[in-house]
Length: 320
Image 1: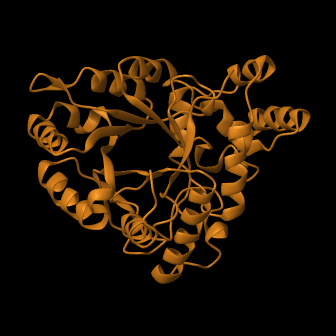
Image 2: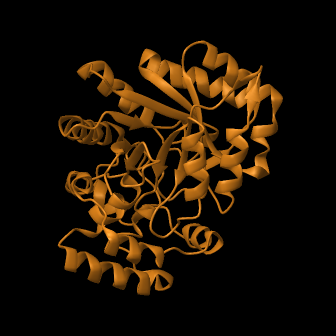
Image 3: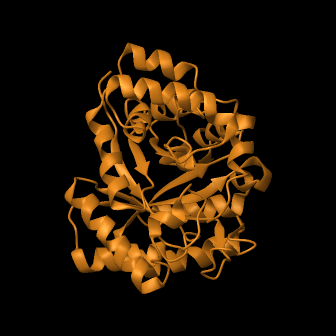
C-alpha cells in the first residue's frame, strides 16, 4: 500500500511539565522550567523542520506550547509551514506536574472568544487551522448555534476551522461534524482523531470525512506511549507481544511500525508525532519509509481494543 500521509509534530508533551505520555518525565530530563523547556522545544522544532516536517499542532491547554511555537516561528520564519491550534480546554496546572487537575473543558462562547484572542496573540498570521478541542456529545458544542456562528465568523476571516474528537463515540461526532452547516456552507475543513493499532474504530468515519473533503489528521498514533516498549499494562500485554515479534521479524522499530499504520491509510493526510525527545522524533520519522504489506495488515486486524476498553485504559494513564 502506498504511503499518502505526512508526519506533523504535536506539542502536547512539549508545552508543559506534566503529560500522560508514558515516560514523559524521562523525556524532559529535568527541563521543567519554562526557559529550559522552550529551548528544548525549539530544538525539536528545528530538527523536525530540517527533516521535512511542515505541520505543527498546539492548543491553549498545552501550557506554553503556543508561546513556544510562536517564538520559534518568529525567530526562524520557516517557509511553507501549516500551523494549527485548538480551543476548548483551559490549562489549570499552573506549571505543576503533580497538579490535581491539569485542564478543564469549557466549550462556551465566552471561552472561545477569550482563547481565540490568546491564540492570535501568540501565533498571529502563522495560524492556518483553528480547532474545537475534544468535541464530544456531552458538551453539545456541535449543537451550540452561537459557538458555531462565531467559528463561521473566524472562518470568513481566512482561517480554516476544524475539530478534534476523543472518547468511545468518536465516529458519531465525526459524522455530525461532516453534516454541520452554518449559513448554507459546510463549517469544518478538518478533523483530528485518535486512530492507532489499539483504537481502530474511527477508521470508517474518518474515511467518510476524507470523501467529504475534510482534511484528516491523526493524533495519538502511539496511544500515548502504549505502542512503545514503555507499556506495561496487563491489558495490552498479549497484543504488544505479538506486535514486538512481528516488528523483530520485519526489522522495524515498534514506534515506526505503529505510526506507519495510520500513515498508510489512503484517507489520512497528517499523522502527528508527539515526541518530546530527539531520539524518539528521529525514530518516529522513520515510519515514512515503511509501507504496510499484506502480512502487516493481517496482524493489525487483531490488535484493536473495543473503543470502550481503549478509552477506559487511557483514562488510567497518570500525569507525569
